[in-house]
Structure formats: structure tokens, C-alpha cells
Amino acid sequence: MLFGHGDDIYDYQDIRINFSSNICQHADHSALKKHLMAHFDTIANYPEPEPWTLERAIARKYGIEEDCVLVTNGTTDAIYLIAQAYAALPYNILHPTFSEYEDACRMYGMQQGSGHLTWVCNPNNPTGETRTLDQIRQQSGGYEILIIDQAYENCTSQKMMSPKEAINEGNIMQLHSMTKTYAVPGLRLGYITAAPPHISQLRKFLKPWSVNALAIEAALFLLKHDELMVKPDLNEAQRLYRKMNEIEGVSVLPTDTNYMLCSIERHTATELKDHLAREYGMLIRDASNYKGLNNHFFRIAAQLPEENDALIDAVSHYVGISL
Image 1 (cartoon, rainbow, N blue to C red):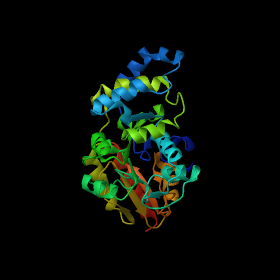
Image 2: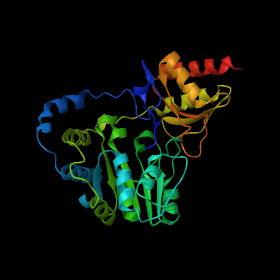
Image 3: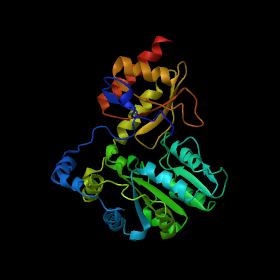
Image 4: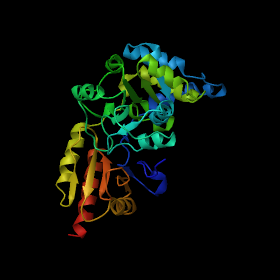
């Protein structure tokens, strides 16, 4: 496992504004909390060995067959499961992107190569760029299996490939994150949608009781309440993108999401991160440990306008000290 992910708030004291996680920080969980408290007794019994009830609910939601869905303990669990199930295939990863793909492949002894199993994050983390449906279809033709991690599909207005479309392609596996969609990272909820042969192969390596009873109960509730999906303010994200780009010595890559990849010229990302945490109680993501990036890169996710303004002012002041 690569240490140094976002949301490492446990390493600091008095963090008041968290820009380091791509998950929206101001979700209203009151309805979910009320429901879980009313069903708290579910912890007194074992959950289903495999969350079949939840898989059926997801299948109904997307209009696909039950044998096209596999629920996992978050999308990271899905990544390691896929690597284990297809360990014999060479893999390819398009960088910079989420580090767990490569960590999982290495754990199960997979070798790098082209044309077999390829990992794509769409929208991509950490850059925020998206691929069109045409680009994905063209890309899928060159691979035995194309894995599309759509954990951040709810963080963009760009059209994403639907589970039904991916299943019809035959060689595409999609990863979906209820963690991100409903801003519940502590519950660890994810699922894979793919053609039945792929789901059948993955089930051979699935551990029993990998998804706990409260997580299953939460997911069943959330699937019935689309209004509880957490939609980031993409207009505010674009304002933050423009304002950050106006800071001398700071550059920001274009993004289709609420998060963006930035670089700073005269300092390292670690120095900026530590300064913001210590002096302002703000947490950003040091992105220097992404493969293909250097120690000047950091990632931020837009929050409330007043919080974004505070970040702009703090970074501007920090850069201005050394000019």
C-alpha cells in the first residue's frame, strides 16, 4: 500500500478545512443516520456471506441482470480482487492515476505488458480529466479487458458510460463507488458491473462476509434516495480553478470535476501542505507520490466559496513571501 493518500487528517491537529479528499465535505447524513439507528440491531447477526440482496437492488436500478453485479468493501477492495482473479494477465496502467492499481498488480505478481488488462480512471484521479464514450470504445477494442474506475462519476457533468453499455461491450469492467457518490467513506461501499463471465471469475476469489451488515443496510436505503447523492458545485470548482491559476508561481491543469491537480514552482508540495496545515488549519493532498509527477504537485478539491477564498488567500500569501 502506498502511504500518503488524501484525507490524512489523522496526522495533523486542528484541521478545519479539508481540501485533500475528493469527497464532498459538507454532505447532510441526517436521514441516513436516522435510518441506521432504527436498524442498528442488524449488527447482532451475520450479514449475507455475499451481499446478494444489495446486488439485486443495484441490478434493478440499472436494468441489468443480477449476475452482472458484484458488491465489494469499497472500490479499493474491488481493485485488489480483480488483480487477484486475473493475476496471470499482463497489465497496463495509464499514468498519472490512482496508485492502488499498480500496488494491487504487484501484490499478485502481475507483469507489465500491453493488450491484456488495462486500468483507466474516468474521471481520472488526480487530474480531473474525463474520456468520452467514443474514446473509451476505441480504447476497449485494443484490450482483452478494460477496467474503468468510475468512482468519481458523480463528480462531473460529462457523460459517463452506463453499466448496461459497458456490459454490452463484453470486455469492460466498471468500478462504482457509493463511498464517493454518497460521501460515506467510512462505510466502504463499492461494486463492480461487468458481463457475467467476468463476475463469475471474480466470485471465485471473493471472501465471505466482506461487506458488513450496516454497510448493506445503508446501501439499500441510499439506493432508494437519489436525492441523497452528493453533487459537487462544479461552477464553484471552475472559479477556484481560475483563481488558483492567477496566483504567480502556481499552475492548475484543466479539470472536468470538483478536484484539480496543481503545481507550485518555488516550493515543494510537502512544504506547502505543512505550512497550510500548521498556519491555517487547511489540508491539501501532496501529489508528489503519484507515478509520473514530481514533488511540486498537489491536489485540491473545491469546498464552500468562503473556504475556497481562504485557500486562495493562504496560498497567495505563502507564494508572495518568497517573491
